[in-house]
Length: 238
Image (cartoon, rainbow, N blue to C red; front, side):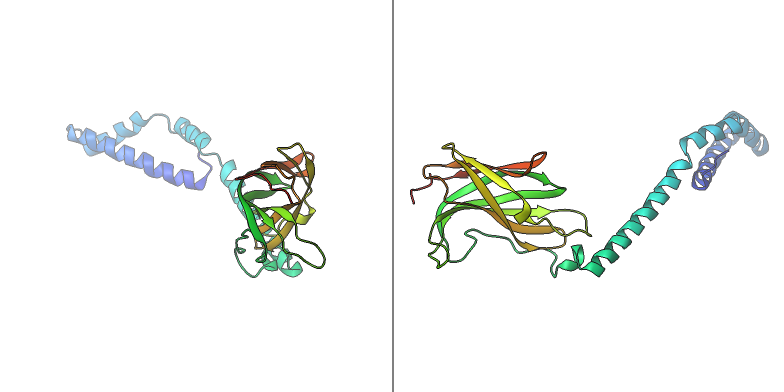
């Protein structure tokens, strides 16, 4: 009555053990072995009814589906791995497992002006985005850009799809509003990537003097996250 082979074997072992125990208990009461065995079987009940009940408890559908999904999952993993290898994307686009940690100030020749903290994060386009550190820095004089104040935030991205490249932070739009009511655009940059994670940073150039906290929105409508930056001191005048 039991269709699943494994369940049939286990049921046979368990029922046989019960029958043997019951027969042994009857023998201890002085009943001859043959008669004890017959009584133990009769006390077990209708074998067909027991078989139908056990069959319902061990449906053959679930093991079959489990095996099917396992095969499909292995096939998908193999195909995606081969595809990423041929196109040098995903796992095969990187030389290291984990990228170095991005620290602030981002450039060695930049000067820390005010330390800060950042909170918030979430998912953008299936990629997890998290923020770690925030700082107000002063950039050095440069022939292409004069020295200026810049608010920087370290970002990390992660995903589980081995066949995909990491999130390109430069393509993620950002806007901000600060404690003074001023608003503007935040720019994101990718730095280094690994198979499943990436690092980068966000910057706000020339933040408003007197502002001490900033709320940043990253992403597009319907697919956005928010970050909150708190500085230990107000942004000084340039």
